[in-house]
Length: 161
Image 1 (tube, rainbow, N blue to C red):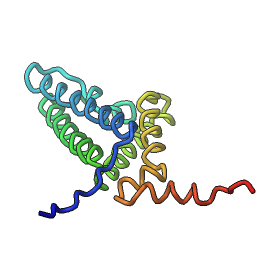
Image 2 (cartoon, rainbow, N blue to C red):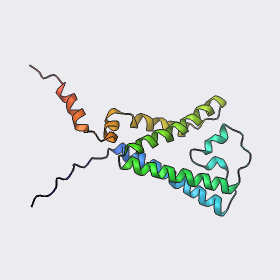
Image 3 (cartoon, rainbow, N blue to C red):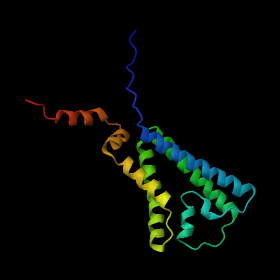
Image 4 (spheres, rainbow, N blue to C red):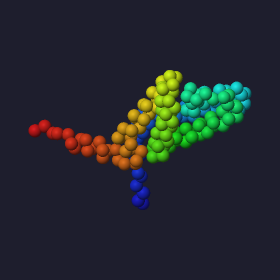
């Protein structure tokens, strides 16, 4: 009996795995902060991943713990969804990473003007954008054959003689 052809598996580059792990750790941190805010209370807004950096840009009055917990849950769920999409090489996972990096960079750029930037957060967001915008990675997320792109480079190489 003829078996249906199995589509070739796309290998995940190491960078995709590293970005996925970092996104997952960000999500776990958000869930831990949400659990702390909702159970024991007295968690400052500045501890919420991605959104907490706004406290260095805008003077916020003390935010109630349920609001901090809810914001952390929302951030955790969204970042976890992006991590799954990025790991599964879905185009929306790539777009989600770009949106997360854009939010982080926007807040940090305003913080640079004010004078209180978070250099670590900014460096991670810049590295994620630079990595995800490589031609090879973009083709991978579009579902196009990366081998065709790499083969074109090899075909353009000059042969001696």
